[in-house]
Image (cartoon, rainbow, N blue to C red):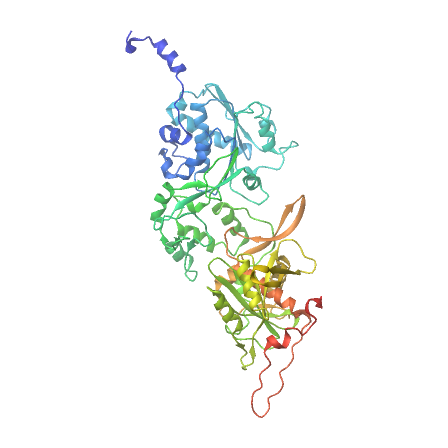
Length: 606
């Protein structure tokens, strides 16, 4: 019998037996998903090409290796629609019980009415499976499955029902406990026990605090992936970062910054405009920190708002410059734009505060009543950042000079140059502490050759009772023995700098910068803040970057210079007036390096 003559009942029966199409979530969404005009800025047929970074997240849902997906996201990148596409895929391709958890019951009801039900009604393949008459607002019935929509604040809505697919939205807004019950996420996970081998869990949120649910889950993921995009000029793959990536003229007003900001390639330094972004996103790849694309049982994805096709580079810069000086608005920028956690700050500093600490002296001029100079050098891959700081009584200090060099020879020249007061009294750097973390061999060689004024140091994250500790390094292959290496507890000196910056101008012991100091230096000095974290069940205070990827080289240099001053006994040093002039010839103060290098018993001053 020809197929077109088959009875209708037979055709219906065969349609039921027909297996679903073999599609990934992104393929299904591109073919069947229709966006609602009430909740979408771009209603109509869904296209993953508009937000290509969501393809990898959605398709991980159908990968047999993946049991749980963690998506730490900003606003404006399509994260909620990503979850909704997975939900639609389940209904059409793999019907099984679903639980969707929102922060509150009110949000659950809103999402059901304005997102989930329209999702099914607008797509014909879903509308045919949606049993409207049998459904309630918080319990939707479909062919072969049901979906429970619950609020994290309601233990009753998380009641014991077997579910295979668990979706949790904005988990950082969940209460710590669901009524008198345990953590709502744990309660929801309990529902998946009936499906030990083929369950899927998806949780997403904009991060809030570092100990928040989504960031903790992301940090504990088996694989943490970031979206790498190719430079349109050189092809180098990189992630979009705010610090160091988005460039703008800081002297311009915010509205001009909004119009002129651009992105700079980390490799070729080429200018990347907004028009380049769509092609970069289409050719992007999810990779881990080693540059490999791989999935695991628990796979984490992280994305910031710079990737959003609806956000221009200038808008990101504008949002930062208009919020950076207010903790509340800055927190929103860090959370909602960078998708990074905000931390409870114990010590707060900003770049304006540093610039206010002007000494009144020009760059390169040594302030009056200086006792000695110290230096600090932070060694990087392609350059050396340095600072030179003058020290006076009661640990008062002034930045005389800072900048960067490209060779060891330049560092030697900077540290051996004479620096004079307004009256012509010359000073030289008595002691310079040089970081050995990046290139220890070259640093040891340099310090051994310049041992009269240079010493190698290495930062320690573990508290050292005496603030620093001297060790000895032997390099037999170079014929060098007994090279001094100081282990320095950086947190102590960061506390010292922060406390000295916060002092009133009229109080002794302040920390100052030269007149007309540049903002880049000030921002690096304040790139970290002191926060409270939990470690091994205990709360401890640590210094951490305010935003990942921020430059803090000058802060490290000042830490090293402060250590050098401590090593020379600045706490007990007293200024000595220069001898009066003889025979109408100005007698210069002896070179500071010779005067104070060993004025107190070496390491035993403590």
